[in-house]
Every structure is written in structure tokens, then in C-alpha cells.
Length: 353
Image (tube, rainbow, N blue to C red):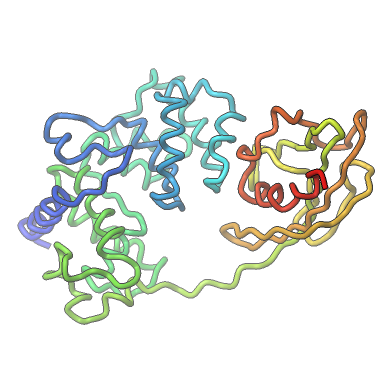
């Protein structure tokens, strides 16, 4: 592609973005950027980590709570692990929350509380991969780094009519995106392409009639835009099963445990349970157990079915695993989603009849 062509692409898209940029709590508007307001790298980083595998709508409230409670990277670095994991509960992919703390602490410890200003420097931080490094470098520091997420892949596949299915086409789509990344306003451009994919060039029923790139779009010219990008059909997810034991002590305390730091739900608070291999296992206390139903949850690579058993026990009972959390300290909102589902299912069993 000739430089003039690339410049025309960027100019047209930035003109559209100046009029239609989405308003987000972590974003500096085009007007404010022209007035000299610079994005806060901490807020850009936090939003990008939260947005991985999650929607903008789901992230807004989490972002506001995090930045109200921990307004700077130093505040977050000093936070207790349990507090951060509790605020993260419900966002899923809990390894991100552990990486969030590790990264914040590295920024404070190794960089004086200031995020590196280049993509290469950002890549040295824990939990920051190529996509996140490019996004922070472009949006916060106006480095001409190419940002490629699912929205950008879809836009490029349609703009250039790339028929090779994903994930095999990723490298080619990234090269095409790099060819369009401008040196002027690369941060706004990166956000503009993502906005275009999220609001106009959507997975289904793209609004081609109001797209700023409708004329050069090759897929639109061939009438195949809705079928792109193509994807290799995924194999069916396996189903795993297990048991959860939900216990309430006579004084209202709940039996909980902190999961191991590594693995799914690492570091999160939850109810004691069996392995997810379909077998059973020893209950955490001796009790008159009653099964009240099951909860279902889907992770990235499998579906999970957990049978929920409940019991009441007397004060003084010592569990073989976990610990009793006093009623006043137990907050269902601190539980990851699958555990919250189990709480919602079983709570009626403990209510006065």
C-alpha cells in the first residue's frame, strides 16, 4: 500500500472518530486530547486488562469502583490481595487480577510508580503481553504501535476481504493493520478502529451504509462482509463435574476456603469442594448433608456442573479444610461467579422456615 493511501484511510477514520467516539470512563475524548489532556497510563492499563475477554458494558462499573478505591498505581500496589480479588469477583479470568497486582507492584518497585513510556519497556512488566503493551503505548504515549484485538481483526478481514479463517489469518491481519497505522494521532486511531468494529463493523449485520471505510471495503464490494472473518469450527467443550459443600454454623458463620494461587479461580474465596473429575471426596466436616441442586458454569475450555450439598453444624465444630468466616465478614459479592451461583442456590436452605 502506498503511503498516501494509508494516510487517506487514517484521515477518514479519524474524522469519523472525532464525531462518534464512544464515551468511556477511562478514555480522554478527542476534544480533550486536542486541548492537551493526556491519558493516564494507569487508567489505560487498568481498562485494557479488565477488557480482556470481557465487554465494555461489564467493565464500566468495575473500573469506576477500582479507580475510586485505588486511584493510582501506588494505591493498587499497596492493596491487600484479598481486597483486590474481592473487587474483581464476577469479572472472570481471575489470573488477570493476580497479574494486575504483580504488575502494579513492579511499576512501583522497579519504575518509581511510573509506567514505561514505550512498548518495549511495557513488555518487561508482568502480565503485559504484546496487545496490552501496544494499546498502552499507543493510547497513553502516542507511539505508532499497532493495536489488534478481535474488533480490529474483523475490520481488517472485511476491508481486505481476507478469506483465510482465524486463527490462521492472525499474522496476515496484523500486517494489514500495521500498514494502516499512522504516525500522527496513533492513540486516537487505535481507539477509532476498535470503536469501528464495536459499533459499525459488528459481527452480525454490519452497518455498512454509515461506515467511513465503506467505499474501499473489498468484502462489501463482493457482498461477503457478513461472512467474514471466517473461523475454524471449535470442538465441543468437555463437561466436568464435582461437589460443593456449603456449611453454616449455628452462629451464622460460613465455611469457606482460599483457593490455591495457581490454577482456575486462583487466590479466590470459595466453598470447599471436590476435584472436578466427576468423583466425590471427603466432606470438610461431619454433618447431615442434603443435596439441594446443582449449578452450571462455563469456563474458556470446559463446562462445569457442581452438585451443591448443604449442612448446619454446631459451634465448636472444627473442619478438616477451610475456615469459618463470621457472618459479619462474609460478603457474597467477594465470591467468584460460580461460587456466587452456589450461594444464591443454597441460601434458601438456611433461611428460617
